View (cartoon, rainbow, N blue to C red):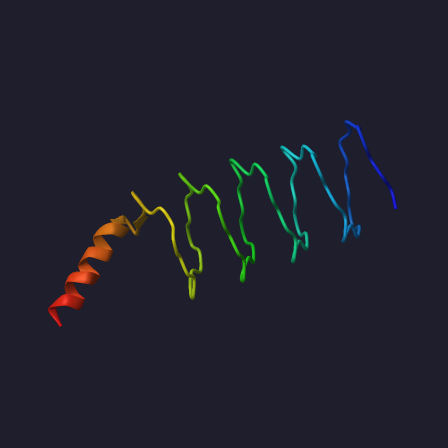
Length: 112
């Protein structure tokens, strides 16, 4: 096991296995991950502002108590996604306010 503490360094890691590693109070700003298996990883108390995720599999993800304000989702598979107890003011789906979609659904249900 290698331990790094109090180190300011740029690492270039290729074809390596770091599974089971722990990162606490670490600055990874500007880091780039490409073709990396991060399945089963946990992030808590992290700043992911400005995060860009492309061509990723996050199926089965659990996202709780997270600020996604201003986030943009495009070409995303949302099949089976459950959204509960979330602040959705101003959320749009294909340009239509979610609140309007919900109101139309409720009106249609009442009209039955």
